[in-house]
Image (cartoon, rainbow, N blue to C red; front, side, top):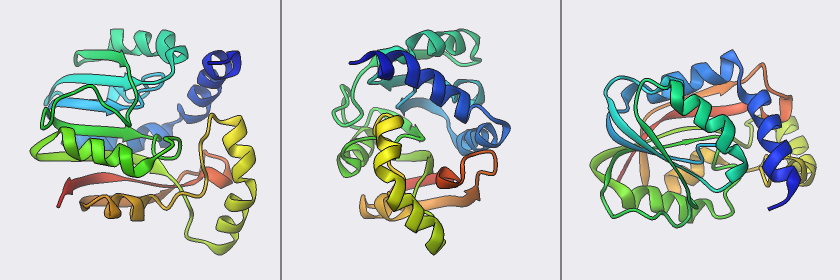
Length: 205
């Protein structure tokens, strides 16, 4: 794992996505979370302050150890207990049906295999459990889509594999989830190419 991914990228992403607009989406996404929750792609811990009191414990996983220093500071000040582990969201080290909720926040844009990751989300959810998400992806305006596809390679190079062109809504539906709630948002504080986002909750069909 290179210097850029471990030391520079965590700082850049933390700075770019720690804004009132992004944090409001995180807060609203997590309103229905409760019990034992898994967060895949914890990053620098920007979701940590937004977990509601109904959450008893968060188990967080991330594949980049370069996030750890910033993440631990946010874990220390969180109002719910959070345990952080180094692990890959595509092969979770947890038993089937072991979490009341699973969270991804700006993660599906980057994982190499979205279908595999969402299959793992389904696997570890308890019956009646819910998947909470806040993700950016392919926009609904033709001009935006054109530029997202044009700039996708540069985005992946600079942002650790983050893709601009993933149709998040379709990918979640194709993974056999049904939306309990979903809200499309335009993140005005974000660069135009990553401004198309959605947050909500879904349940396995």
